[in-house]
Image (cartoon, rainbow, N blue to C red; front, top):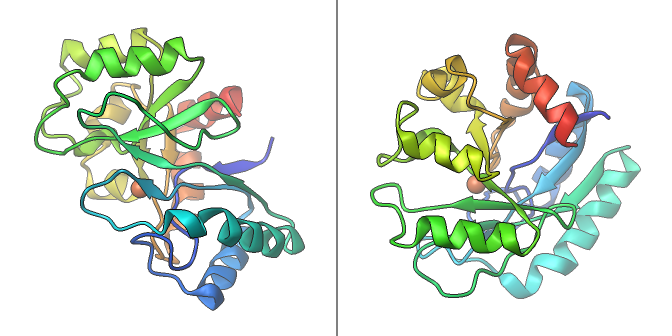
Length: 210
Ligand SMILES: [Fe+2]
């Protein structure tokens, strides 16, 4: 396997990622220079705070995938599904298997466990996006261990490792995936590579996953 970034918002003019087409190409070049050869683009869906041009996701992805291929990068389509209290969870799974999910930062969905179980029963592996952000979750909570025991993977953002917010999760070896959640910051690809070197247990887990 190569190096993966599994959470990013690089598709131009789709969600709150702030790259235009030229910026997207430049960003792909930066990923290549850093040695990251697999990128998953994960536009927000069902997020009440982000307007996403759902109908343009697939055509824009087709354009970006072709551009990435020319640079030797495999681009994959996923989504970042905002889970609140909806009855049916619909997402674009990564590699037909992994569903990246995010939640309100302030409060968990009322039926959190039920919804995650539904995804798992449907054959998917939930990836909890930027786990360090949720005010209702703490690495010492039993809930974190229940999430992992039921089969969820925990993803941390590299800028949160830098700021220290994700360190309690990392130091407890609860993180399965580090990713950029890149909305257009050209510094983040290199940061991801450096973090993977610094935290080899995460690198090993990601190699097992992808
Ligand atoms: Fe994101």
